[in-house]
Image (cartoon, rainbow, N blue to C red; front, side, top):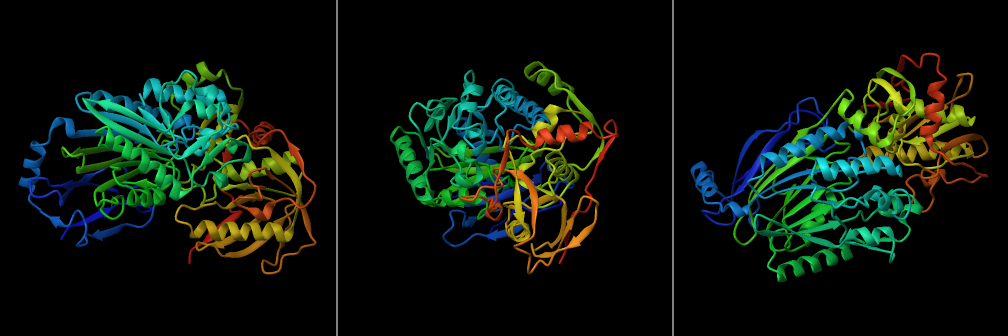
Length: 568
């Protein structure tokens, strides 16, 4: 009886599992060996508790053979054309401080594996926000430094509205962007640059490459970013993918890879409902998935053949290497999936030089002496940078309170000199800020519902609401314990969380995405009073706020306890 282990937990050592389907005995026989990945013990990937799974009687892995001699014999008999190595990354979000780490590793990967078929793949969300110059910098690195072979299209590739920013930044980029499950308005930028599928030949073998955009795009993007873009629902996505798989098969292509920005659970569902997919390189949920475990990230396809699913977190903290062997019929017979950390606590002089060349000199705002690092899962853990940014919105717009969805902050600048570019990268979405009134009931209900959804969701979606002008305590199950209003004189007024007032109102600052009613993540914050709109986002208020601080040359930005989480 075979037992495999998936390493998906919040803290502790991640061990890499190598899963082998031993062809010498039968196509269904499986064994495993283990060694350590480069994901260290002090990492805290946002993934669920360790699980183990036993093979079932109808599993394609049911006949376990522990003979290492058999493994060695099998490995010696593998046709070199049946070997494939993949370097993968996802959800970089234009995080330029850390992208050089994965770029350097990709370049080394290409060099070290020049004698075997290899790919460098992205699962999308390479950029974030509509800053064309910065996005162009990222795509240039992907093409010329990382030699990326193909990429999925994430929801953030659409930032800037109808793909116009995307078009501007990839005019000179030759990377194929693939979305099999999306249709685009004719003659639109996305229609011109995004492909339904791609065939790439390596070492005399043709591989079919497919892609998916997120099926929840209407809830995770601004309205103007969705114009002219239609992403299919799950059932139609399956049909579109299967139709293209069948077309590949007609051409004799039996090694098929899906670059998916649908999310980890959706990828597992896709794998189980498709016939012919071998590998899914995933993104969107920022899951850290290490190793190869049957029943978790190695699942049975519709035709009872193994499909491996991989994903490497977010913000260039991790990258992955996947080594697989196929048999002559294109079925996986060996899988070795390994994650590697790529964490830098100091700015890279090389990246800063390249950014200066591409983006120009960015004005200095101040100097960070100490700052909370970005939490592993920013949606469920408050930190100092987002709290001070909320303070900046309240101060600069002159309101009683300010609110930020914790998922909206994509980066905490590193210690040292901080520039306007650094701050913009931390809030890159270019939402417009609004000023309106909120009732006490709206505010409390929004905080309460966001907390419950976030703390009970495996990925922490939609994210806690972090604010200025109020504090609150929740349990780690998401139950609201207390809520207080903090006035401009720092006086605290407790609020009855079970009976908040509909008559008491507060002037409030937040962004237009948080204010979305239809398909929004916090519908309680849809304005009921007149709205004043500002043509800038919270990065601008942060620049102004920090530049006025008397200690701006020695800033200390730490969590101040305005949001507390009690363990139950």
